[in-house]
Image (cartoon, rainbow, N blue to C red; front, side):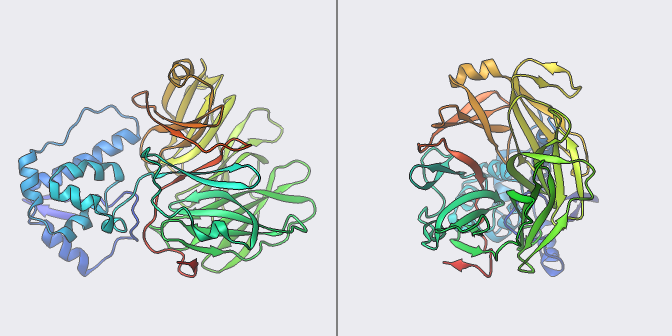
Length: 451
């Protein structure tokens, strides 16, 4: 949206992760534009400057810029706005910028912190879902706030459904979680059902049975695709692999819009890709997973496929001996690897370290090195070995799990500082499958069961 002020045209940012649907058009925008004409220029400059700082940090550009505004003038201008108009503006900002605007005035701070406005304003990382295994599968939540509080009731009914002998977590995407429920008496590997749920609202839905898999195929990698800014519908992609060979041959796709499964062959992909782990990430209408090209030792790629199974491609990723993962951070796909041997953006070998890479453009086929840190220095801070568990969705912070499996460390790669340590529940097995969780308080899963 544009606004004219003293013959100058100012662009109002309409970007950022939000729980709102796509921007409305027509009368509501004309009303908003008329009201914005009354706002002092310093508010507009503040909005624009914060957005510039956000983009500079995403691209790794050094900047010492600060918003050119005066606190007194900003607070005075903020007083001219109604609460509804403030929420309309703030709902279109990235989470990090939203936190900056809590300092504008006491009333803005209270408005942003009010739980009643959670459906409108963008949310940040609340914590991680993870599993442990004793005599049964245990489901846990680790809060990044350090107080152990979860933004929902942990006694959510789908985790305690007597219909299933066991439920395992598979993926999380923009506030929704994907689970797999196994029957108490399994007669075959097909005796399971997928569940998609929203922990913040307690609503969940059970998917229809997946189509049978041929005898020379098997499936063990599954991803959830959901973008509330585009649609209320979601997709589940269940990848099919060859026996022998283990490379991906196709994908079964469930669409909540049609309520049915469909199969798409991976024959359009020239390379044969073997998934290195079951981690899937959805962004920009595409699903990403880390794989290894068959016939090539240590040649890693990102395999990419759209939700229709029509577009297949691969993107080379840096080689590293050690743990690696992918995630969405600041609106871009990120790849982080902790290795005994790492490389820079010129593919030159470096000392052991942890490196963070960014895919700036969804259409690009090249990752750009964004941050790096020395493993020995990091080991001195943590005191033990670790593996990469996840990436923060709003900043250059990576989460590392200790080798003992009892702590999760947040490491800020930009400032090279440890932020917090989360104590984890212990089991016979180490905590598994950390799923970053950003709450979605708006209504979703309209045909779901539950509360």
